Image (tube, rainbow, N blue to C red; front, side, top):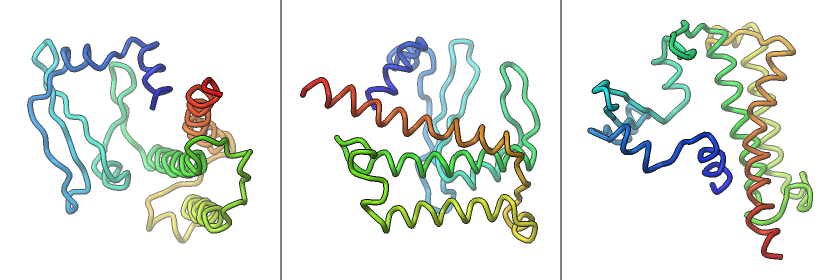
Length: 176
């Protein structure tokens, strides 16, 4: 969490400033049927913004466009596949990184918890199956990714691992 706050601060994103520029005017609490929670904010120009978090499947199902700077591009099936793949891999990298609050993954060993590693590997195999298996693609609304797209998804999603392991170094190695 500390590393995320440092990165946000370097980008000029301060919590107090954001809350001042985008005050919350409403909230839709998490609902297990909706599988989402949302907050409603107004910017200084009076424009309303809705920020939503929740089930990625539900967010993708409801999404029709991706913001690209000031424009919006249609969210294609291929874009949804890349997003879903990246977010799944984010979760896998995150679970590996948080195995220990203090110790790096390479010091405790990648296979020191075989059940967890089995679950991670099974998730990756299943994700590859729904991405590349023609019978599963229509069911999961996916398309095959090129090797470069697959690599990009993995590189982007691995940043959570680097951030968590980096935070361990900042937090616990300084005290030693």
